[in-house]
Image (cartoon, rainbow, N blue to C red; front, side, top):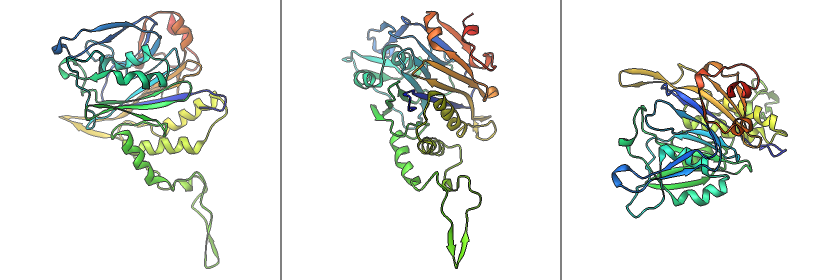
Length: 341
């Protein structure tokens, strides 16, 4: 949050597979599906969204749009991150009345809620479930946790652990992937000696010993790896040390600088999946101005060349629109009008 009140949130999508990531505008009144696992035979409900929103979904998913990133016309932003090994969704019982699939959680939260306060009150009333038989086309199950931020600056983390919904206040202003958020906060205590201030010279036997170089000497010990704990420490500490900027424009730039510090280039995070060798990489980046309803987005091949969108104009069109992120016309400037043609 800048001193002028502007709230900006950003995220990198670091992934190894081609998900056919698609940016979609959903107008106010779009259908939001609330359902239980089909085998339970419980009634489904189609809500009409209270808010327009824009989000990113993997087009390779069969049978629906699972929004993992987005923001709505009320200034609520959402990002879903990977939490394998720790996520256990809730179990729906025949007695339950309120439920939503993890696949539809993004559309539900962005379409129906205005603020983090409202979300904290209402979301625990719903069971969030996952049934692998009802999801196909994606390379891994959607083991996810979420960060929600609104234009007041309030932010929470939502996780599903041991079959229960867990909500944390986002005191670090950061979320990466596994482990769980409380683990990351505990791990951050190992780095309390990090400082944005260079250490003073040390005098030994009358001789002054200075640090090697004056840039960032107080940051020695900051992890530089691409693990999720390492990136959590870099992002959270950089945000804290940078302090509060004055304007929304400066906030946009600061978020961009922090995201650059956790950007993953191809070839630097290689793993073997079956017979295939894959590399995680920062497939796309978003910067969300939640106060002014602005969005900037860039893909891997255009990492420093963001497309900017005026969401007020897109939402006012009252049209559903979609574009492959890798197919957007990347160039300098605001392409809102061009995208609406």
